[in-house]
Image 1 (tube, rainbow, N blue to C red):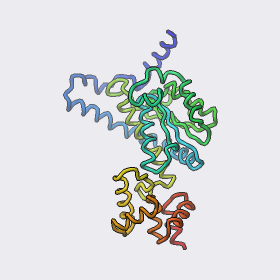
Image 2 (spheres, rainbow, N blue to C red):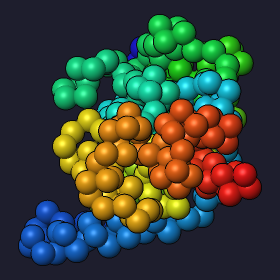
Image 3 (cartoon, helix red, strand yellow):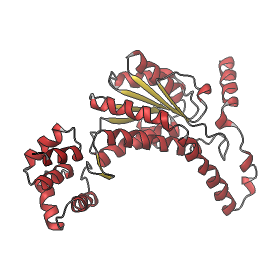
Image 4 (cartoon, rainbow, N blue to C red):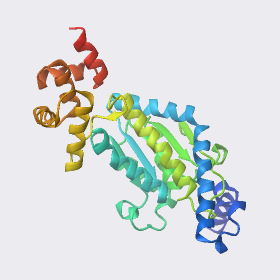
Length: 310
């Protein structure tokens, strides 16, 4: 056990995120204004670093989109901050894109309780990741995306290795150089943010970088699935009054109808904005609009273009 601990210590010692940041050496005696300036200056570097990995992120977007087309799922596995980011991104997909809760899911070492209170030691064993893969009945065409700032979290490594054995495609999002990563997924999205403002606090730049990448992964894949019309989310689920009113505004935005007529069409469409838009565009029934959307894989532009050819 002592040797194992020493090996872990040596690995941590070399991680980029575990180094001290020269820019924040005196942050402990800084004024509030100086503190926020230091943090903001470091945060500004993150977007530039992400921009250097756009090609590989785009590759991952297409991989996830293809999985969705085949009926697969995107499953995030992470620990601590990384795990929480995955859970949050997954939870936001159904209300934003009208996707099923099963299509994108997030899993965190230690289970649901770890979202609020750290579950000590839960991330330290690969078998825990393997167990979660088994419990979720993961199989192709599912895509497993590991989230690990350090690139070496055993829970994440276990999930990725187990998924690979089952023939699933795998992705890893990390904030250390890929040379420091312990696993070999199909796609590595490494955003080497360097040392944190507070040494080892990967909830900061590392968390920001991972959040940016996850935004691109799910938003990009959903766009490829026809969930967006122009740059508007038209497949939203109307789970509260705000979203109902937003849906009416979207209908009014793309058509010449007024508020009351938009409300009527929304009701006639079964509270489905895409269907309502095609109904209005073609002067057709709900059932006809649904057939057009299905024939065009949910893309409104294509459905309306087909209308114009008839």
